[in-house]
Length: 627
Image (cartoon, rainbow, N blue to C red; front, side, top):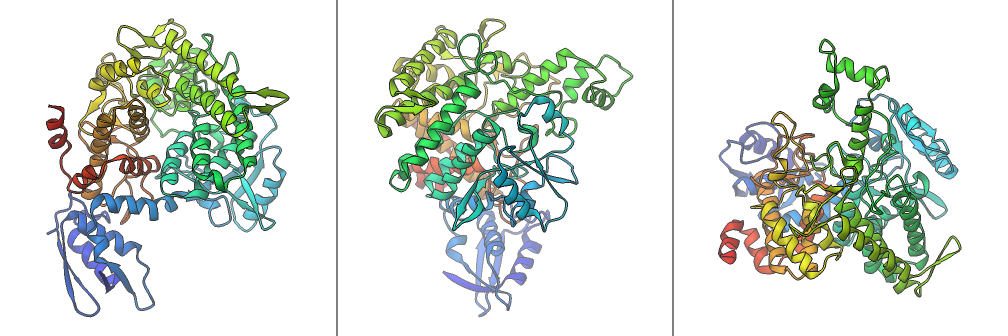
């Protein structure tokens, strides 16, 4: 039912009455009466009750465009919509677009701004060989003040990256030609303060885009990754200058396969051929270079090159670590930090710490005590699962779409070749990472020559890539699930794995009690791969219930992460909770959280969707089933 109202009057009255903490949101923390009367232009009166419906009204008022008389038309049906339907619709119709960026005249200034760094000058760096891009960006920026356009050197070294840490900037992305005119290829950002294209975030975002039939945006994400590999040598942690020496967890072939399977009839084979060629190049140059990301045991590790303190972290982030290495008690942490940055203080141990720290950030799991201070010395379960997936994806593509042979640099690579290297990887994973005693996979420490036994959600990754035997899958679930499963999902690590962490040490956001969308999504798919449908549906319901409940109570919020033990987005941990700072309407939610919601709904049976909309507590459902 549609009603016409004066937007300014209704919005002002609603906020005055219901937004008692003056944060431009209506939540359960507000102390208003939670009952508001809407007066229409025809003097009809409608009453809206309850936090959820009142916050929906606030969102609809903000989204509606008023005419010259200040009148808007809003739908009472939208305001009273069931919560899961509304959240999913907001993601599909609003949030993806709010997260979309283009390096064109209308969007470039916003992308060049960087909330992580306090900088006055805005820089855009262009790859050495991309002369067309330089001309395009010259044209785009010629009428915009305070933008500096620079070309990167032909060879990008850690020393060069360090030299421009005080001159950070965005890195150019892919362009396309439409009607003989160059245009920027769109991409999506994670959300909140993150205003650039991130590595593994993009894979999970793309799952949501494919579910919501956002074909061009999904393809744009892949094309931008293709451009990054060709021009920067890798898929970057993110497309900012201080990330040039870091890659991210490899999901490129998964994105390609999932997109092509859905849109094969609308996609030329030449596009797939370019993606395969690019994936092989990345596989061989980024992951299989001996001594770097290819370790001595034949498995892979994260190994992000760089010098000194990372450029993107907030002030004070490393104080706990720097204090441990500071020998002079009369010297402040800030003085020590500056002298170390300027290389007036040499510390091989601290240099080694930051090699590991950068590698943690390359892993995407920044930060966790699983990897703290040792990341570059570990061949991890998650990374080797993902590289195995590349090998199997390439075998699948070549067999099914290229008549079982793909010519790459004068080599004829057949599907059997990729199946063979994948089989060898499984053998190595079972040799170094599989633990017979617990029946689970663990990261392997190359220096100590033993498994770490740190219990992490990444232990479920082999189920996602179908690496395990049925017996292995069963034992992994039996071992890890009781240690990681809580009321609202899977924690990043077990509580027990943190027992050696000092009490005064900072909490790490990828550990207990926090839960993250990519882990949940990988685990759901892994369980379904091995026939554990009931368990997958339970975990999906618990996760979606938490998102739905928080959104209903807190003005539609969809944040970066959750405390899955207590079921809240209010977390006191490093970096806070990105995506929770907004007014009126969530500003795009958060990319992979949006995607987890769309994926979860697509996998949930209709009877659970009904219970979700009634916000039936998960324990009311599953305690009965499990007992």
